[in-house]
Length: 201
Image (cartoon, rainbow, N blue to C red):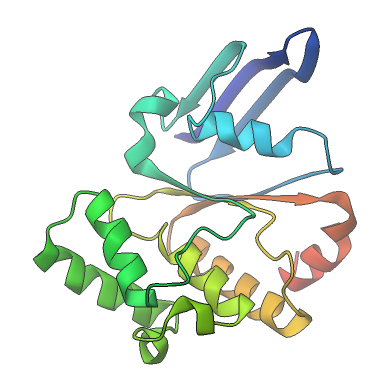
């Protein structure tokens, strides 16, 4: 099955055409890297896939569904940090678990498992304001690992991370992909060489 199917996608703002007839297929379970220069419309593109904004025209299907009906199947991690620095890592994930419809009892068990998977268990009770950049990015990716999520969209995920944190982060993303989650990673062209090396592609 196609995790993402896009046909002749067009997005206009007034008389400016941002996306010009894009066609794309990403198979379920793939690790797909979308590269382009800054200002090329990549964030608008993934915002349409995530049903944050609507296309002007064209067909978009996520696992065979309209994007608005597929919200429970995907998670979009934007470039900007969105976790609350005033809460602990665990409190942030509990908040997102509740947004995903899990009861408090269910959420506690799920969050514990996710924190362990992401290597954040020992820091779960620390406020996010005390996290390093790499730890915070792991936490935000963790919001995309709740049961039912099949597609993880990452928009410029390693901005501001040092080389060691980037290496660790990409190792983690590869592991998530190897376990069956489809990955769409969006980045700029200048990142291409180092990214391919880090992913061993």
